[in-house]
Amino acid sequence: MTFKGSTFKRCTCTDPGTRKQLGTQCPKLKRGNGMWSSNHGTWSFQAELPKRPDGTRRTRRRHGFASQTAAQDQLDQIADLLTLGERRGEAALATIGDLIDDRLRTGEPFPTPEAVGKQLDAGNASLDAIPTVGHWLTSWIATRKKIREGTRLSYQRHITNWLLPHLGHYRLDTLTVEHISRMFDAMAERNDTITAAKSSDDPEVRKSAHGMRVMGAATMQRYRATLRAALNAAIRAQKITFNPASYVELPSGRRPKALVWTPDRVERWQRTGQKPSRVMVWTPEQIGRFLDQAEGHPYYALFHVIAYRGLRRGEACGLPWWNIDLASRSITISTAIVQLGWRAEFGEPKSEASGRVIALDEATTLVLRRQKKHQHELRVAAGTDWVEHELVCTERDGSPLHPAKLTDAFHSIADAAELPPVRLHDLRHGAATLMIAAGADLKIVQELLGHSSIAVTADTYAHVLPELARDTAEAVAAIVPRDQRHNRRHTA
Image (cartoon, rainbow, N blue to C red):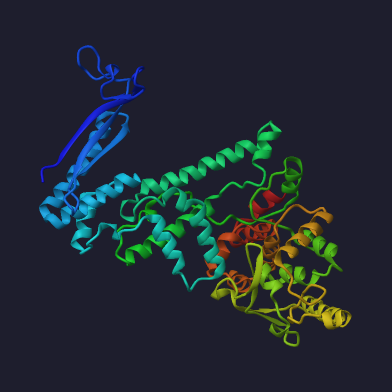
């Protein structure tokens, strides 16, 4: 077939008498010399697509282009695709005609002739075999059977909140780095809006941002990781050959360094309300103050093992007595209570490295012995209402403790002790810094915390207790031999 297409200008002005739109006949569309007016109306194109199988014509028009160049560009893309079809025969031409018709209906961009050629060469009878990003993400998450439920929920949030609304309408083979970058630009703009609203002098504006959180670099990296995993699966399924998510530039989202609440940092926080880092760690004195305040609380045993032995919150709440050997003073971590949204359920530790055996000090062993005695008293008091789960710390009827309740209790105790703010998870970081300050090797700290890599441990605890940094500096200085006169001069 010989492709037929043309561009034209039209407007929405109406005839005063008939009330019908003038369309291409409006006198304002052209100047007196026959040239098109530059500020009236919009450009359109008309394209004649290959006939349907029943022989009926398919004339397609699209309107609203800002310039003749923009309209002609779309027309040229259609012409290039139809030229490809003509070279490959009637069947390919009909298939490409269906593709163009579908894209005009949905508003999706046209694929390149090269991409269409590859699909035809691969034997796809219908180019619609390439799904949209939205369809692929939905089917991909439904087939992910061997992942933790928490990971699945995280993937689903990413897909629902941002990936589907911003990228779902593109076909997989037309998704570009620029499309994905624009989504992350929208995230950054939302952050700016939230930040501006929260710092506004207008209380109504501040109220509008209540409960809204700025999306950090690490969160953006997780969104990209979800999309990249889904697109890699599409490559394996031979739907696409290129993963644009791998080439999007984002802030590093590196793990924040743990900083200690030194007196100067506490003073600045009291004055400005600002934390120096997202990960803040109490000094040994502050940890002691917290535990003194928590003494006698129903959850004290869990706070103690987190502070001294670095358990995660879910590991502490899901710790059963059968994994504690008080005689040999050790704990085996093999279970956890995982919070999925608000729902909490028993599950496995965070990763393979999280399953570990932890040695207990004498003080922690004594705390656990007392807890076992206290729990026996609770069991007797509850009688037949007791629900046996054999956990170290439970509700008064023996039912599992919801992790969120442990967090709430932690903050209440910390506030009562007038301590600078840290998260419950940072109490686990405190256990690591105590070990490092006591001279423990990073490898031992890694094994205690159940980190998957020593690099994670090193990155997080590179800046720990100032006392440790000073001791290291003194040790380095002592290695370098100096003249005695130099030493006397600098100590005078």
